[in-house]
Length: 312
Image (cartoon, rainbow, N blue to C red):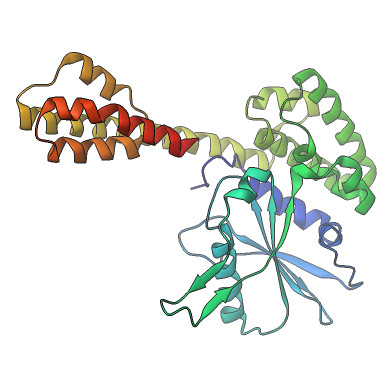
């Protein structure tokens, strides 16, 4: 199952790295002069999204292990550190490694906790440093200056506030640049990747609008089929979440009814409007331990306010 909110970013990014190869390495500051092979390595369990590994085919260049981060995850650096450790163990490799995280947005970078683990005595610490690039802080000009093939990443450099009319023109411009930067046999695939990056960056843009602006048929490509499947999975996830919230609300109301014999209708209505599982969990605890319904109602708004502050 895909990570929440990615709309297929991992798979599209892997396809891009495969086809652009050394162009991505240039963006990382690697000018080794020898060939790299890009492959997918499933280094972590319970995760269908592979880590992207670029390994030198000869010579002594760094092995590059990449993550494309398109959602909030405080432990992304820890996960990448784990992937690095597992790669070294499985490959029996003790050479140089460059761990890289491409954040599609600054907020995803800011959400990441520092990679630092200390023991209780403070005497031993594991720390990790990474090459990190925030794509939305680059410009199309920045990418093209490194290598014209990097235009595929340009959707992440455009403001999310751009109008659909402007985006149509810009996307068609990208399509032309891709056709000039890549051979005909791969340019079509990479225009599909741009389409998927547009979907990932601009959540209000529909698949139909992207298909029209780039003249692609995502249903006929592997990457496109993946994104349609992601949409189905997202629908399933939303359905599961809806069911979980319903159960959590019923548990709060049931706890109140069990303890006090009845629950005012307006309070039931308020509980049934809550969309945060954490708030419902706290209200369930409050319903169990509170001594009277008046106290519960007095604490009710405080719980909701705390939940809102955590989100904001």
